[in-house]
Length: 299
Figure (spheres, rainbow, N blue to C red):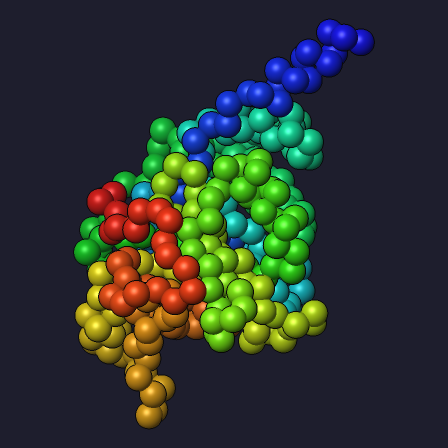
């Protein structure tokens, strides 16, 4: 019995492997051809496989970050987010670490065709959370790499109701830390940014949704944020590709976090929050506690 206690304590004290950033988001798409046009032609992200887009198609912002589109179990789902995945340096060690900390894990990691080692767990609100150790066969640099509107997916946000429970999972167990928090009005907390322990990417708790949000509300909350140096330059590139801003509205918005942003919506209603890497004004409500992200030099 005493031996079992010592083994349990040793496992719980096992070092956590590094978690360095966002790997990918998997989204439900009712019409993958429509989404293909959005992510490939408008955003300029590399499509794999390059032809015949079907469930499981990926659109790469760089060699290690992508959006994956899958067919939903039924059309018209309100929640378009299937899962969020993070990059780790050692998937098997992280799987064992989480198991030692009373998180339900699969019996083994999965090895993908490209050599990625992956596994999936559920957070306290039943969101799918995946971890990926990049394999030895990443996508090669595409000829159109210069056409990417963004080279770095720097954060993902999703609906959260129980902050304390999520903090225990992401902060206490996984080592994420509070990066910034604020709200509108500034007397409440609507958004909580939790930065990965070994990088600059973050997740964002979206705390303001009602108990039964609409498709539009979920599409706005469950989002991804590609980083850009300038949203003004981004708008020029978008317009050159045929995109038009809403009539009578300036799409460039200064967020309460002090960063400029420009929102798009994909064909299934998921918000794509293009955000500048660096703040241009003082952030409301709290100060940043970590380093700011930068463009990816991959590819």
